[in-house]
Length: 168
Image 1: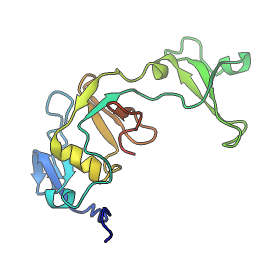
Image 2 (image 1 turned 180 degrees about the vertical axis):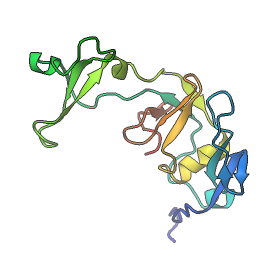
Image 3 (image 1 turned 180 degrees about the horizontal axis):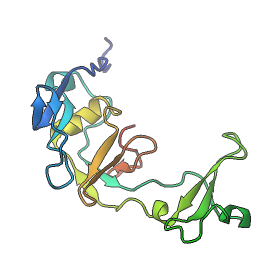
């Protein structure tokens, strides 16, 4: 391998931080605070092969945010809301024409206010797993909200001090 090149990730090299049900199998039961009793991680020997991202420990819960301009709903679009709907649509995100000229996304007030804005700090083994294989996880935990939320390009978290989505 060339200097600075990272070896391919062996995703079968899984271990557990916290409680196991069996070797390599995390106990995903709630420990009483919303977190699981155990989490899957890449084994230390796999993490030692190198990282494709910096090792970061802290992320911010920003929620889902529109990527494109929002506009008010037209009278026709307002009809999509049912009378008394607890989560009516309030805005429409206009996707760029190159995606598809007639596509977009409806947003509720709750959607637009998602993400508590607070930070969560994870342990070393979890942070190194993200750094070795950024898309290893499909979600992560928010300590303030007490729940797991999606990560990735459409996820709800950014690494503290950046605009980089956790899991990308």
